[in-house]
Length: 143
Image (tube, rainbow, N blue to C red; front, side):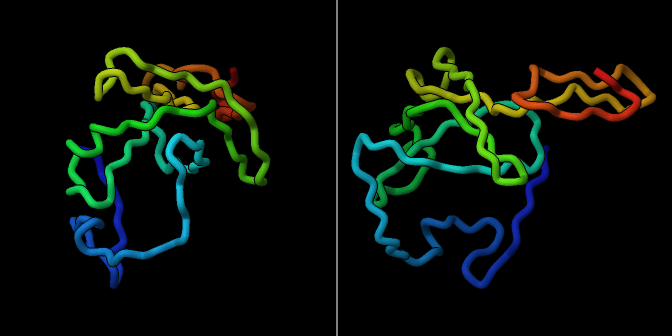
């Protein structure tokens, strides 16, 4: 199995369900049904794959079944923020066949995984698909 990391705090500990232990915290943010909302994520260890966003009404029991009922459509392609803050628009790959729940859309992570085999032991690294911008390789593994 994979390994995840979680830092216990005074508000929540590993294994807690946020919907059960965190107090209601009104932010003043109101999302209008049908509006587009900008989201961000950070990928710490990219192993390929994709994602989708789902909502569950706050007054419902927050279960996987509830989230499966409301997958959100994507409004646009992704952007990539570089370490210097530069934003770069990407051409996203959307998948809507064979997804769960049926009829939903999944977006492929825009940063390629590498088929990594220990350097010097097996085949060289290769991108799973071309990176969206210049990506240096190991000095002994030129393009």
